[in-house]
Length: 168
Image (cartoon, rainbow, N blue to C red; front, side):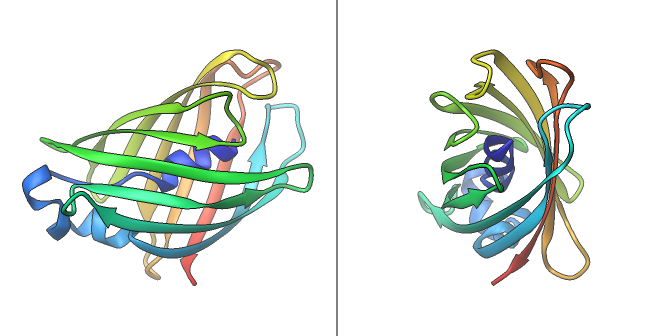
């Protein structure tokens, strides 16, 4: 879950030649504080999650590098990821977080003003291969909302994440 959160956070860019001018990428760059909920399965109670993330444009503006920490009542861990624009509204990257064993592979597309990413990872809790779909959507107040729903590898049902990020 934290992984999906980070992956979501780590996402944004357009075409490589113009990524620095891309409003979606520019909107995600900065210092962010996020809070929301994580549910590890459909039967689990939601847990509060808090994050502090720094997102910087790198590689001549064609990529977004994210670092920070996220924490639940039961655990905390670092987030480190990079999303690269591949042209044609396509993105890919990797993310390392507490929620996964090893790196998470990210791929996705811009859809309107949002970024939708597919995250493939090995769940740190269950050891299962898992896939989550994450959306990063701008909010009217200058922040963004990260939502994620696990599609596979959820054990007793698929989990969900909903985090609202604001500039710090």
